[in-house]
Amino acid sequence: MPANTLSITDNRTGKTYEVPIENETIKAGDLRQIKVNPTDFGMMTYDPAFMNTASCKSAITYIDGDVGILRYRGIPIEQLAEKSTYLETAYLIFYGELPNKEQLAKWTYEITHHTFLHENLKHLMEAFRYDAHPMGMFISVVAALSTFYPEARNVKDADSRMKQIHRLIAKVPTIAAFSYRHNRGLPYVYPDNDLSYTGNLLGMLDKMSEAKYQPNPVKERALDVLFILHADHEQNCGTNAMRAIGSSMTDPYTAMAGAAAALYGPLHGGANEEVLRMLNAIGSVKNVPGFIEDVKKGKGRLMGFGHRVYKNYDPRAKIIKKTADEVFAVTGVNPLLEIALELEHIALQDDYFVSRKLYPNVDFYSGLIYEALGFPVEFFPVLFAIPRTVGWLAQWVELINDSDQKIARPRQIYLGYDERDYVEMDKR
Image (cartoon, rainbow, N blue to C red; front, side, top):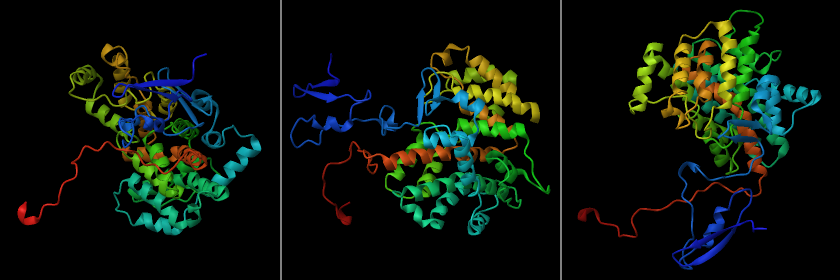
């Protein structure tokens, strides 16, 4: 039986090294033994953007991008989107198993009864400009939570960790809703603990003068499905930020503010906003063929197609496409949908895109649903951050409990000057 090792021959010295293989990987540190001279630092790998580097071991999310598979704790995303709720899926992601009735009831109670914000936080939000970006407000307030719960810095205390987890999952919809109402000059609406997680969010967003808000069940369920699809996605940019910041043993509020800041970028959580801008720029179905040709000539960019991980049709995009039909039956069809469908139809038959494995991703249709539900495009990243909170926190707990992990500190390849002397001002 062959040894479970990798043989590496350094042609500079003629030496051969045996490096152990575990879980189809080798430890980067094992390459340090490869040296030309004893004083050398040793061999390193160069991997910009971590394209082929595993930074952790995780049991939360499995993705096979070549065939379009996404599973939380082994359960296919298609089954969860059809049968589960967001809070049940959040429990699964966090604890590793689906809850029984008693466990789900307790989990739901703990989340529901931490939804209110300290009044001082409301005053902090009121201090923002009237047109402040809701994601900027969201990041700032999440970070500010750490000053209200100083015990959160005791990250090794499991009971304290759990209390912060309940608080964060519970409070992010309230923070999001307050930022939304702030932008519209409307009074903030307090949580209604009689409603579901997504129903309560819709209430805080939309409630006006009615004594008791009742969410539209189709919209409520659509938001629940979207939240399930966005709950975790392995080691993406935001999750990597959560782990990197968390590795310093700071509190989860500070770490999550950094993760949300990463999500803020147009290449991450802002991608569905870019899709809508693209569809609006196309303007009409008749303009789609010309736009496709411009993209092929390098004169434009096809937003919502292609993914760093998926080299097949993003499984979340298939689910969202079905959910979109249910939402549009209530809200009316988004006029941009015809453009999106034609764009997808042409692109999936064009060898230019198929050969490059550019298939629709989760952002292609999610923006259309959010717009149909009445959300402005600047609010889209916030709607991404709310459900991703549980994924960030589950990944953070894995980090805290992983004895292999240390404070994140990547190496660099130094290409600057060698040692040189300081030059006096009058000689420059």
